[in-house]
Length: 610
Ligand code: M6R
Image 1 (cartoon, helix red, strand yellow):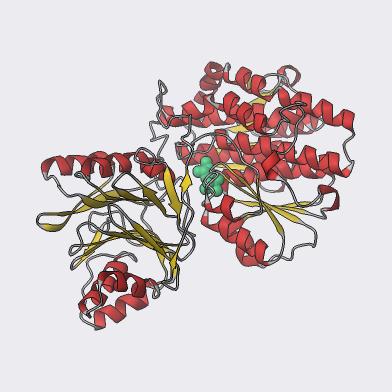
Image 2 (cartoon, helix red, strand yellow):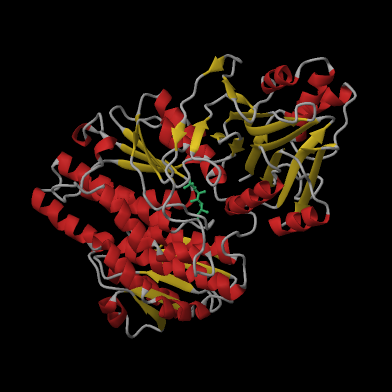
């Protein structure tokens, strides 16, 4: 969602603000802007659409200042227009914001009654106008920031500048993350550490309700009661997987191809360095024993949710633990009754998803043990959970999650195996056999990638469709849901996933010769049932794509289908192998349709508002 960069610099900042906004493009946005304090006072440039438009605008009309804020906006309140784009300026105050000011309407009418005017339809503008009103009432800039923050309900990460203080910047966070970067004679604000990574690796993660005052040489942090507080300065590791596309046309394709390595890297962290056996990482010491755990809850959103839906089968079948998965936005408001001695896993690539974070906080209040399965070690979810089980997928830039998904599957599978061993539902021998299969995931995924050409060819079947259905049974049912999500988010084709067994209970009414059906059906114990469903679809002239292994493709011989043969593998690791096919189908279909694969319309990479 909205990206923020702020620089109190010792050299002109526009070029760096712009370069950072380009790096933040992956978060998803529909307009962008920059403000700086120039010799003419506060000035800004804003534009709708790609950063290239803002760049063109700055080329025509440059901004020269040593302190500046930049923003990529993902519209919530008010259309994507130049008028609604950030930074917002009121009088001598400029601000950028990520989040939602929920009481903006009440504040707006209060300020209007006091004679202040508004130019936009955004919730954010009240922040600038309220601070401006407090300045005009005689408060100093710092006092005005502290006083204004107490009036806002909802979520915010803010960057604030005052024309009267050209070498000072304020930041504040509640609900949405904000990072302070400590440079050499310069200070930075960023919506995440990646934003400021080229400038410094020394960061402070502001805590809930914190706000800060930065100059080039100093920083002060205050808590929600305006008391000065010390926050830890952390050194952020530089990610070795660079955030560029290399020779790939899209980040998504690069990330799909990185999977053998990202899975291997993740599994390596879950392998005992001496004995070579699968185990949880040493620094993820659990202060509970899975043998005494009554229930496992897994809470997440989007693709991460589908990873937990696959893992639900593993926890129940391998470890015999009653398991429930939930969508975080539902969980957080449902007041779920949680069993004693249960543990809750929060799965998130970004570690910043607002609903997942809120669900984590709910569980903590209920006294439930919390485990974060996250890709960003320094994220809010990682910092607030009792235990972190990291995925080591490296930075994922494409909005459509791919390598993070398979890394999540890897961590959840190892955790389920660990739980099975602790509970005695898996013998040592069975554990070893499963471990051998896990060790093959990387090479099987690599083999799946080698079928890319064939996978691309089968996309002809679906690239002109208006609706596509995905069907699967067992662990392949959530995979079908994930395949459909991937297709809809980047190709804009309407796609739905169903459990194959549900077909006759409704979805079959939708089948025509214009609705391709993708069956994910390797030869497991449910294969024959899947093929019966496939026949039912074929009998209604639905064009079928069967994704199976060699035996499955051969046995389906008689059915009128297009087939896609994936590598033979142990059933336990089939979700990894079949994910690759589904990801590549979505990717190639989107490319054939000419969509913006890495930044699909309306989507944000990290959903930091509800
Ligand atoms: O960062 P998170 O894993 O918490 O994000 C959850 C979802 O927003 C995310 O998986 C989303 O569904 C992706 N666009 C799917 O490709």
